[in-house]
Image 1 (cartoon, helix red, strand yellow):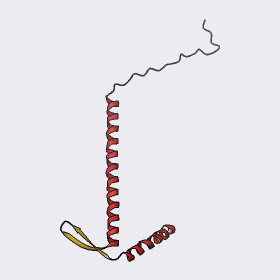
Image 2 (cartoon, helix red, strand yellow):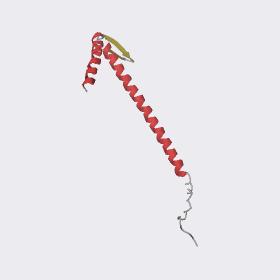
Image 3 (cartoon, rainbow, N blue to C red):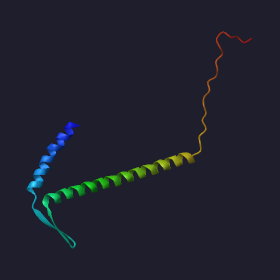
Image 4 (tube, rainbow, N blue to C red):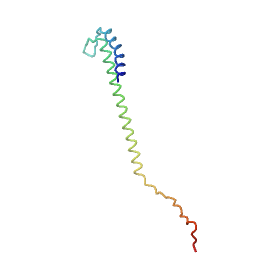
Length: 104
């Protein structure tokens, strides 16, 4: 657990350097709204939105895959249930007479 914390701190250092060096603001316009935000904040928000969209896309794909798999399983179980059961014939070996028994 300690090593994860140490790695997290090591990765945090470049992030903090980036935020400090890119603290100047930029203008953002969308339709009729205008905002002034720091470049670092814009980068982090863009990264977070990209991650969220990627997770949602992955989730939707997984849900579709599970739904299709359920449909295939239901179709397979319905086809097995609707098929007539086959008669099973077993080969029953003939019983051998015990050695030494003579029929007279």
